[in-house]
Length: 420
Ligand code: EPZ
Image (cartoon, rainbow, N blue to C red):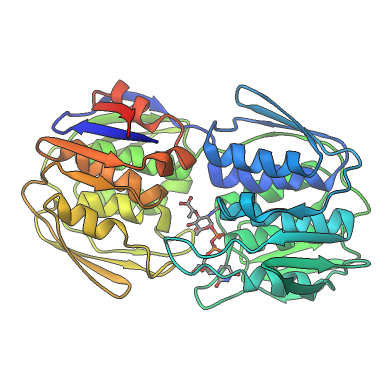
């Protein structure tokens, strides 16, 4: 297990290129199970979550080749329909093989992913949607066992206690591509990762309209074919790098971004006194003055992303005043709060709110990464803290960021990776 040592105080300067999106890639890999033909996916980030999804797909008896950032999947006539607990429990996104398995093989057994450090994370919407398409589903020995003679299109309202669901929208959309008739998903997630998945499915021959809006219409087709696809840039990595520049009073050009995907973050950075210059596929993030306190609410897209909430809290922890950070997607996603407080931050959490009293200086300390984005928040705090920060359990970071420590080092950060 690795850990990171960070010597705070460097000002980040230069330019950095964002990798392909983890959260767009994972369902796209699952979608390749919908056709026996070859799919080629480019700009895939080398991450441990990517490897987990590849292991799940290989475990079904499917051929997968990885050449650098290109992944080739040819599912042929695979017959296995189970995704085991030992793999699904390590990564929730693996649950999105359920829809494709059911559509292609008429049955699927996928382990329930279980709880997670960022909250309860139920899968009721996935199950509700697939049942509406005609699947019979029972939970047996911790597995979702689904069967369907033929999936049939239906109008489905896919809203839960916390609004839309990204992966449930993806799962139902994938299953509906091969269903008989038309499916309409109301209250669909509008995240760019859903759009990316729909675009890939359309390249495979699906007939999907409305992606990116709350109403998605899927006209079922008889079969899907192979396709080549270029994965979209990772908007959360871009956000993390933008906050890294802002927190260190740096000036960093962040290349390979879709600027529109970053609107909510850019707006909040600007409110905080950070200058963001927008280019065609890059942004330049620069801070001169102090950080102003800004209230932020994590919401479904196009709102401020929950996956950047922890990192933004690190920035607010050195603001010149009080900010309130509200989490409307995962009300318990605050594992970073006690760790930031160990570094001298002054954050009080009450339910889904964190009240952040900005402090003049954070101090280096040993801290524990608890999940992917919390780890990134601690790295960002370490960049600006006085002295040395030791971030333990960085395997969380490696699940979702391709070479973040190396990219930050190239921008001037002092980060060293060692064995824990
Ligand atoms: C995706 O998870 C992302 N994961 C998450 O990124 C991200 O935080 C999340 O979307 C929200 O943007 C991947 O894409 C692999 P949801 P997902 O279903 O789809 C509730 C990261 O750090 N809900 O949109 O699983 C749920 O509990 C990760 O990269 C139900 O109630 O999230 C939450 O409150 C972490 N029932 C809300 O909906 C369900 O059946 C939104 O979750 C499903 C979800």
